[in-house]
Length: 211
Image (tube, rainbow, N blue to C red):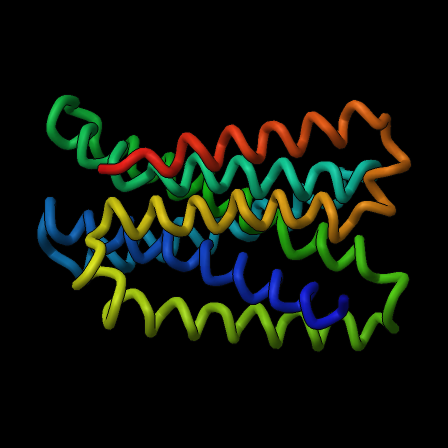
């Protein structure tokens, strides 16, 4: 169970970085000046991570339930982010506003993930072990994403399908988390757990629409 838990950490870290890389690459393609685009997007994303981490302290109850919902939201917003940005560039005058808004929303949600997950599992380990294990696998996931993105994802899938693929992965994490954290979810109403599973499946089905 512990191995699966930390694999989950690695996967969600990879998903968050992929969405950031997709936004940076897409902005570079469409607007030019890749240095400016990547610098501002990375800065906004990291700033949003801090906001999410700060907001996590106000979440006191139903941590597992909220973690699952964060994964679902990331799956939908991140999964469709690339397609939405291409449409925004083609049909609106506010491409940059929409792009940075999506980056900030994704950053806030990713910033909520790790603090909430650490609080969910803190009773299983000593605090120093929780921090060490979670951050280790978080950085491993980021390394994997940074290698996969230029070597496999962009050349073979492109930006739209890459974002969709990792959106599906986020939704799969949400579905898996309903079983991984079944003990915490059982403290809520039974109907809520069923609702989570249904929403996970529906979101996953929507994200598998071919582009």
